Amino acid sequence: MKVINIYLFVGTILITFFAFKQAKYSTPQSAIKTQNSYLSDSLTIDSETGLINDTNLMMIKAQCTACHNTQLIQQHRFTREGWKDKIRWMQKNHKLWDLGESEKVVLDYLEKYYSPKMASQKILNRRELLKTTQWYKLENP
Image (tube, rainbow, N blue to C red):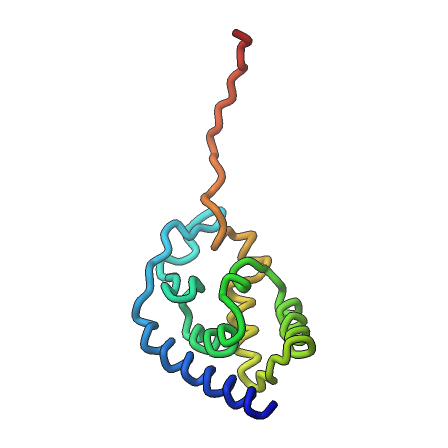
């Protein structure tokens, strides 16, 4: 069991190291809008993970991608408490290690970018809804 923990620790260190090297490669995300205006023109998507770039992204890569794909993060929207519950569930059922002081950083990032609030602001969703839809009556041929 100790050998597995050592491999996980070393893997986390290596992922963090390579993540820092890859951080400079990011693609700007276009059309990030709220209902009224652009949320931010400076938000970018990390090309390696598909997650939003942030100063804490390296911690997310180190803590989360050691075990699973980032698509699991991208497809969910939880409150801070919901993300914390998921972490506890992973610790209980999948032997996720204690995140210690980094748990606050992870929760801050997830709450900021992958919460129900952000889904309602259409940050990572589809295009904006059409505003001027003109309906017409279909005629039978």
